Length: 255
Ligand code: PGA
Image 1 (cartoon, protein in one colour):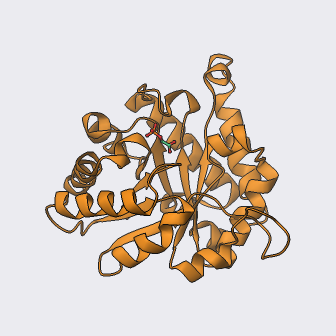
Image 2 (image 1 turned 90 degrees about the vertical axis):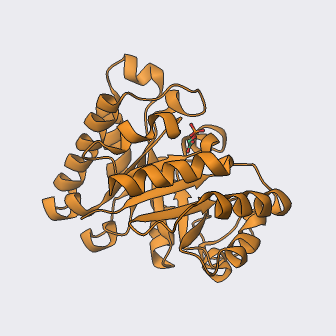
């Protein structure tokens, strides 16, 4: 049985002061401990340490939004996987479309980062998804298949079980426009099929596939009710403690 994972991607928001406020709000807004749901917050690097400290007696996991694929060295401005593990992080978002678009990330760098994350016991949240143009050209299924295949190249079936995939249609990120539940379900089923082809049906049945792109309390229930949607990667709505807590409760109710 796959457990829901509700993950907040804070992007470039919330330095330590705002992060403390948001986490406090989340603690207050969460009426009960989410027993059936895994919860993750991904603050910016400078707020990771305080978030780990703040959340140490809770079940909420902390993750980063990126890593470099080398262990250490002359890579000004970069952060390694071992540094994140040392900080108490357990997850890392990899290959977000904003990183692919603005910071030149490629399928090849994404693949290296996933391998490095796994080597340091960080759960990679691998982001894939098509642009509106690619969807209009009807190449979205092939594109996502290629992204997943390239990202998982050289990764064993056992290791793949530790990867979380997030399907994030670029046209739905931060736009207020959400994929319909049918669009989400058909792409998630497609991704599961790709994983089955790469490994086997058991691996495909176990791997978690999150939906991301304007998920909010108003649409979370219909998206999370889809059989192949195992949670959400939530940007905007995770910056509001009440909204994020509400999505967690919806997932808890559906578990
Ligand atoms: P959004 O962002 O929920 O604000 O659309 C999701 C994401 O980019 O991970």
